[in-house]
Picture 1 (spheres, rainbow, N blue to C red):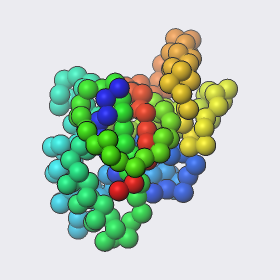
Picture 2 (tube, one colour):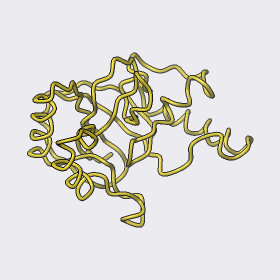
Picture 3 (cartoon, rainbow, N blue to C red):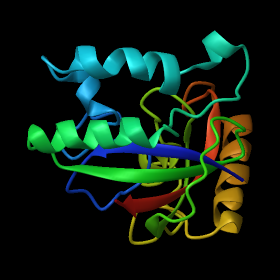
Picture 4 (tube, rainbow, N blue to C red):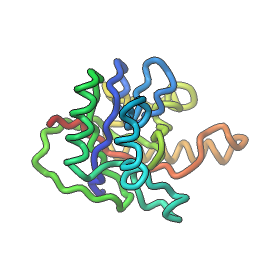
Amino acid sequence: MTVNGIVVQEYSDNSYRGIDGSGFSEKSAQNWFLNYVEGVSDSFEPYYDENIGKTYWELGDNTWIAACNDMDHIYKYIKEAEKLNIKYRLLLCETDVPNPKFDRPDLKKIFLGYDYAYAAGDNYSAVYNEIPFVFPQFQLNQYGLFQTKEEIEEYIAARERFKRTHPPLILEEGDLAVFKLYEIFL
């Protein structure tokens, strides 16, 4: 797996600690939340668009995770979040997607688990959105994620079988990737 970088996520009081950052519900977190804060979004959104949020449509293939590998930007981002009194979490992402690459082995981190989510955008998580409703037979760890790579591979296989035997559009489709996630502390 490639260590891709860091995702800054607004803190949410939710047992799920994965990559889903849609912010659609009261208990759901939002990734790269300063892009939506009036008065500061102009300082962060252009950098995000050019360096973090590259998409399949821009690159022509699934070779990019919406994570940041620039520690100067991360420090600037969290300094602004603290100034605005916004609580946040820092997620270190590893995937099989080759870019970006991040090399900071000295970070203090705790392993959270494995998620299955979009590589870009709000990182919609199939684990967060499907396990309770469609695949309740799978057990998740205390962070709402799969504990091992083998467990997430079993889920993905079950998900593929489900898609073959049910009408289309029941499950989310797209460029989903397996994320190995850590929470990091600076």
